[in-house]
Length: 342
Image (cartoon, rainbow, N blue to C red; front, side, top):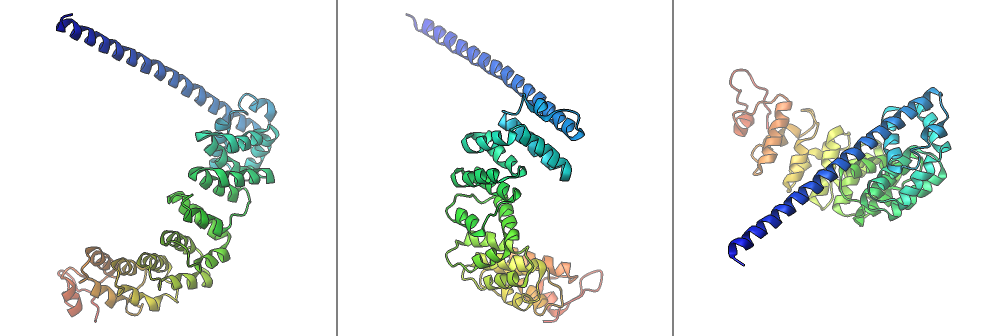
């Protein structure tokens, strides 16, 4: 067989394979579009059924009968409804879903489902009351993956269940919950529901720095004297990142007990703590704050200098002639400047 013949045969085989593969992709695309269209039509039908239930025009069992066993569809529809409807109207729809057996379908999927169906079911169960729902969510929180566990704990709170702070911290410590905005939001909800438990957890010595920082951020929303005292205690932590997080949290609200400690934060050996202190929402009446900011204009870390200059500008103190000009009280060009006296 000549070499040219071999080349032609190889080219024909490759071309045939390419045509076959493109045909498969086109067929799959058509099936995907049809499936998406059917799903969109089903979502519209379920949404219309919810409207009918709210208006009391139809029997809920008959309306939801074609869709009640589709856990993903019912979960997504219920989550959309919860985002728009509250109060008695939501209770009417939830009661109708329970009568139609949708709650059992979602509970079964939350335990034995896979992929998006299980995650959506766990999220939707937060809107369904009852001890059976809470038991399923507890089981999902114990056995599910990271995303399922996070959704289960959040839904458990929404369903009226108790989620101890220590339990969430334990999941974080064992890396069963990944750091994310959703985790920070969950911890804030758990801390708000149990402030004493969160304050007690701050006293634990075995918490990893990243876990302690998350707890500090969540506890900063609790404005009780006990919470402030716990946060102030963290400003003395041997870990610089923990001190910085505590200073940032306290600097947002500037409780009275923190103001005397702010100058110390501005002189901290670690630049992250100095930068956090410079961000504090303090004013020029706070003892040592302005002078501490002026000294930070000569810091060896550029971000600290930038943050200090931004805070001085917020207070109306010009720095465009540099730190030496501010220290000497030199006026800015164009208008008299307010200057700090060292």
